Image: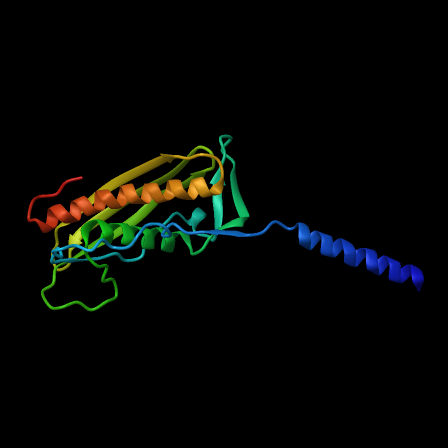
Length: 199
């Protein structure tokens, strides 16, 4: 009986030690630090609408997916996005574009009759994370005035060098989102002015 109790105590101690040694989970967001829409003295007179973003299936998960120089891809159980990457990218793009243009994202929100709304569709074709090397977002996006058949379709590739650590990696992805948002904002602004926009 004494031997059984001793074995039980040792097993409990090992279990507690294992739990104490388990690394903590860290959660990251692309939209944190993106700021809020800038207040414009004169609103632009139009809205944007940014439906759900699509991302490659292999990165459509909460865990970070990182790659190495050897071509290996690792799934990090303890380094996670606070929302699915498609949602993270969509929210970050929305914040960056509305901040750049001084307008509002009215996706799934009623607007006044006749108010111009520019719909922005975004298909992320590559979302690559290489700690200590780069953060890359390759996106094909289009802008269309709702009610019009004319569509401008472009591609933006933002490849940001990053330092070591996951905080630096996420910061690199935020910079990449900002660069893509700047391309999209420029196209919306040009289309809204009545000029012919190009990529």
